[in-house]
Image: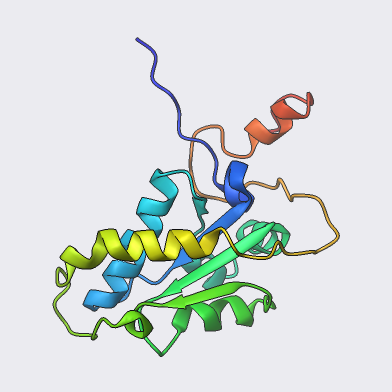
Length: 165
């Protein structure tokens, strides 16, 4: 029995959309993360690791800067995610804030789950209108540090160069 191995999400995968999300300690932080997960599961884009950017993991920062398109899903108006992207020098990305979509922030980490399908639909629809970033460089394949088996070697195989170690 063979199982399909997870694909690397560097640079947004096949759609070119790299999705970052809040995962803060509130209902809207958790909803932001769940929206991003559902978008990735449905093939709208791939998730990037926001904390890796904040920690200045060099390959994650390089991959974010080389992404074709980026969407940041923040939970509330503090916009921690947006600030993290700006901190590494990114300014051309789409930003969505869950509280600006009519959901009030509270401390119930499991609250407002009934709104998840509607949020996924609204935010996924917006993802289709994101203008591609023009950075002038090809994708950076340096290993994002995510730990996915074969991560970033798949890109080299696609180019016919074999796996790098």
